[in-house]
Amino acid sequence: MTRPISRRTALLLGGLGVVTVVGGAGMLWVTWPAGTDRFTGGDALRQPAELRSTGGLLAVTLVAAPVTTTIGGRSAKLLGYNDALPGPTLRLHPGDRLRVRLTNGLTHPTNLHVHGLHVSPEGNGDNMAVTVAAGGAFDYEYQLPANHPPGVYWYHPHHHGNVADQVFAGLYGTIVVDDPAPIETSRERVLVISDLTLDGAGAVTGASAADRMQGREGELVLVNGQLAPALVLRPGERERWRIVNACVSRYLRLRLDGQRLQLLGIDSGRPEYPAEVQEILLVPGNRADVLVTAAPGTAVLRTLAYDRGAATAGGMMGGSRRRATGSDVTLASVTVTGDPAPAPAGVPRHPAPIDLRGATVTARRELSFAMGMGMGDGSMMTFTINGQEFDPDRLDTTVLAGSVEEWTLGNTSGMDHPVHLHVWPMQIVARGDTAETDVVWRDVVNVPAGGQVTVRISFSDFAGRTVYHCHILDHEDAGMMGTILAR
Ligand code: C2O
Ligand code: CU
Ligand code: CU
Image (cartoon, rainbow, N blue to C red):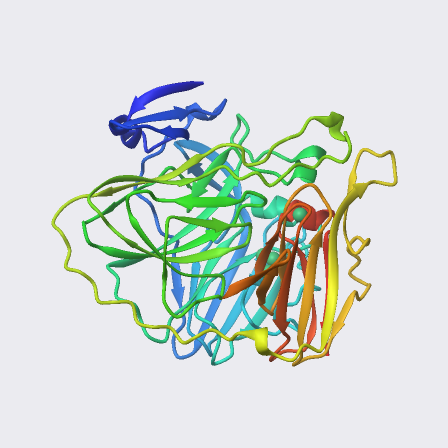
């Protein structure tokens, strides 16, 4: 159903729904997805609880358990950490030690991954071999190096086979590693963007086989567990937004038209100076660290449609191409009003990032991400890397700790795969045949359908065994993951 409503009405409603066109003269065209017009929005944006390290240590308990909350004015039965959606924000400094007691109050096994943190993958560190059974607990401990990059990271479950279900249902939280030299801001906010679908009884819907192949996308796109929340700023105020794409499969193309956006960095990658941007692409798992300087008026934080391709192989799935992320979605409304704030100080220069383009490469590898026909009745697709599905007992890649490698990430399928490596970030050096001219670091790299991306990786600081995988978590659960040992 599409109907025009005035901008004012849209804001009063919290910008609910899916904005398809922002017209002139204060008019918004809002498409209401079937079934979602029973939800309401417009509440003030909440912040997750924040737990900060003191004296170099942060010790927390995270209880993963069912939680009943309210989304868009309706009761919702989800999963959460510490009874909240998202879980608490963990705030650290480089060199800190983080201790997490994870308690599993779910009916399925789980575990914990600290996505993007440069920490050991061994023992009770960021160890993907840990399983915490229902009713069980595990004590994790992570030591951040003294030179750990500041920025936005996050945590989520990583028990193979349950990851997409658990993240979709609400298990995620933010980790912030503070800057050595603070940037002057009026306030900081965390914006964890996630999506989910609720049935009529408020339960999170399951995913069909087709949803899993495509990578499930929820009908409701939430910011900090809220539908279309509202933010209010004064003119001239500068805020720092720590944005996490916690969606299982949804690509985010974020815009906040009419407002000034300075992108400090994505993942652990941070150039010397922020970039003035109109749009920020966050594939699943990516994070953005952004300065927003408020200009008078109203604005809508939106995510624009992104065609990430479709899970079809020569007419499979009845040949019906399911185009993913097919519409623009309103995430939040921003109202800038009141007395102007004094102009903040300039943004201090950040140390120049390491550039591996001049490094000695000790090995080159190719990883090919592919989707194929299943062996069985042909109704399921296979999700493979170099022709193999995930096997935790098989070692796929062995690298020399301390060396620099160049990997070509290829994608023979008809849809994009966001490729993620644990522990060590990747520097993008080429996209297809085109060399990257900037120093671009990511821990999730989008490899477009039919395309390839070349990255360099420095296997520094840690030895041990971990994984790389597609961060469309349904694809990871389906087997698009490999093991790696640095020794
Ligand atoms: Cu965010 Cu292996 O994951
Ligand atoms: Cu990760
Ligand atoms: Cu994938």
